[in-house]
View 1 (tube, rainbow, N blue to C red):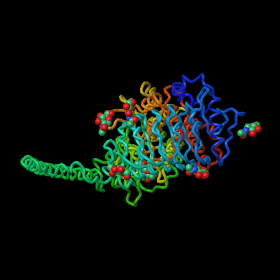
View 2: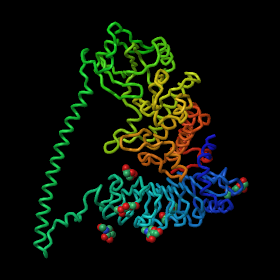
View 3: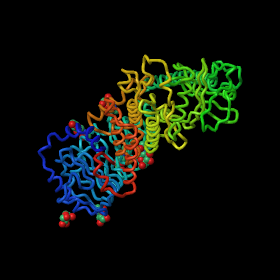
View 4: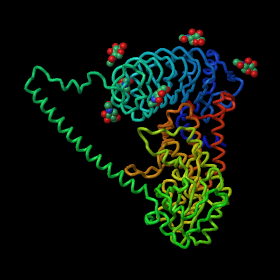
Length: 623
Ligand SMILES: *[C@@H]1O[C@H](CO)[C@@H](O)[C@H](O)[C@H]1NC(C)=O
Ligand SMILES: *[C@@H]1O[C@H](CO)[C@@H](O)[C@H](O)[C@H]1NC(C)=O
Ligand SMILES: *[C@@H]1O[C@H](CO)[C@@H](O)[C@H](O)[C@H]1NC(C)=O
Ligand SMILES: *[C@@H]1O[C@H](CO)[C@@H](O)[C@H](O)[C@H]1NC(C)=O
Ligand SMILES: *[C@@H]1O[C@H](CO)[C@@H](O)[C@H](O)[C@H]1NC(C)=O
Ligand SMILES: *[C@@H]1O[C@H](CO)[C@@H](O)[C@H](O)[C@H]1NC(C)=O
C-alpha cells in the first residue's frame, strides 16, 4: 500500500530520469556491486548474490521502476571498512542516492563516485575518509554530506558551479585554505565548522549563522569576528601624496559621520517612543482589571443578571466555579478565531481556563444544548481539548475550555522565527501530527459518518506540556449560521468545500494534509501581511514534480541528521491527503496508521536491527 502510493508520486520523476536507460541491463550494475561487496569487508552480512534478484531482494538496493538500473544504495551503519575501490560503485551510472554514512570506510574517495552525473544525494558522514575531495562533482548534486571524516586540502572551487546544491556539510574535517565563494540561490544549509580554513568569509555566505563557520581559528569576517585590515579601515587612512584632497576627504568623512550619528540618534529616539506607546497599548489590552464594572469590552457583556448561574458543566469536569467567578476573572485576549474571540481567564483560585465567545450561532437554545451534550460526549479523548462548560443566552454564547499552556502548533511553527527561536525538532513534529490525527480520527469514528470537525488548521491544534497534539474547536463549525461568503477555512479548505460550502470527513482529511505539509515545509498556508498567498499543496506538488530535491523541507529540519527518509514518507502521507478527488483521500484512521508505521520503521533502524526487512520499503532518500 505504502509502496503503491510512493510509486504514484515518483513515477513521473523516475520516468524522466530513466527514459533513456530502458535498454540498459541490470547485470552490469549487479556486477559492479558484487565487486564492491567482495573488496570491502563488512561486519554485517550482505545477502548480495547473483542467484537472487537484485531489485527485490538485495539489502540496501533500490532500482528504478523498470528494474533496469540501480538508483539508490543505503548501507548506513553496516560495519563497512577499508577503502572503496574505483570502478565499483562508480560504475552505477544511474545512481541518485548513495548513503554509506556511519561506517569505517577509509582512504581517499574515488573520483568516479562523486562525479556520477545522476548523483543527487551523497551521504558519507561519520567515516574515516582522507585525502582531497575530487574536483569533478555531479552537476545534479543536491545534498553533499562529508562531515566527520579526515578530508584534507582545499574545499573544491568547483562547488561554485553546482546550482542544485541545497545542503553542504563539511564540518569536522581537516580542510585548509579559503571558503569558496558559493553564490548559490538554493543553498539552504552550510556547515564548514571545525576545519582549518582561513581567510575571509565570502559575502554571499555571510547570512549563514556563526555555527556554520565556527571552529576555524583563522577564518574571519561576518558572522565571525572582523578581519584585521578590512578595506573600510584602510580607506580612512589619509594618503600622503595628495594632502589637499585627503584633508577634504577627512572633513567630509567627519561631517558625514556626525550627520549619520545624528540621524541614528533621532531614529533611536523615535523608535523608543513608539515602543513605549506600543507596550502601553498592549498592557491595556492584556491587563483588563478585575471588577464587574469594567466588563463592557470583555466577554460576558451580554450575560443577563437573571441568568448568572446558568453555566452548564460537562460530566466529568473537575472544575468548581460559577459564571460569577468567570466574569470576575482577569481576562486576556488570546486571539480572534474564525468563530469569535478567545480569552484566557484566570479565576480567583488560580485556575486558568479559555473562554471562547462565539458569534453567529445559528441555532436555538434547545438545539444548542443537545449539540453541546453530543460534543461533550464525543470530545472525551486524550487528543481533544476538553470542553468544560458552556453558557447560552440570547446575546451571549460562551464556551469554556481547559487552558493549554504550551500554545498552538501555529505559534510554535511560525512565531518568533529568527534570533532566539527554539526550532521545533522533527520528533516533536511527528508526535504532534500523530496526536492531532488520533484526535480527528476519534471525532470521525464517534461522531458518525456525517459529522466532521470543519476547521482543522495549525492554530486549532493545541499542545500539551509534553507536546502531544490536541484538536480544539470541536463541534463549532456545524453551529454557525452564516454561509461564509469567503470560506473561513482559507488555506486549509478542500477544493470541494469552496464550491459546496459543506464540510465532510474527507474535507477534514484534506485540511489535515495541508497541516502536514505546513509541518514539513515550515510555510504557512495562510496569507501573512506582505507575503503572497501560497497554495501549499500546489506549491509542494510543483516542486516535487519538477525535480525531486530536499528543497520542499523546512530549513530548520535540515539540521537533524537521518530524518530525511521519514520526512519523505510524511510528505507522501500529506500529498495523499490533499488529493483533489475526495474519495481518493485516505480515511483519518488510515492516516493514523501511516504515521505510526513511519515511526516504527524508524525505530527499527535506530535499533540497528532488521535492515533487511526494511530495505525493500525504503526506496526513498535516506542520509
Ligand atoms: C550465492 O548463493 C549460492 C547458492 O545459494 C551459494 O552457493 C554461493 O556461495 C553464494 N555466493 C556468495 C558470494 O555468497
Ligand atoms: C584503512 O583501514 C584498514 C583496516 O582498518 C587499515 O588496515 C588500513 O591501513 C587503513 N588505510 C588507510 C589508508 O588509512
Ligand atoms: C563553472 O562553469 C563554467 C562554464 O560551465 C566554467 O567556465 C568555469 O570554469 C566553472 N568554474 C569552476 C570553478 O569550475
Ligand atoms: C550572486 O549571483 C547573483 C545572480 O545570480 C548576482 O546578482 C550577485 O551579484 C552575485 N553576488 C556575488 C557577491 O557575486
Ligand atoms: C591561508 O593559509 C595558507 C597556508 O597556510 C597561506 O598560504 C595563505 O596565505 C592563507 N591565506 C590567508 C588569507 O590567510
Ligand atoms: C554545524 O555543525 C556543528 C557540529 O556538528 C553543529 O554544532 C552546528 O550547530 C552546525 N551548524 C549549522 C548551522 O548547522
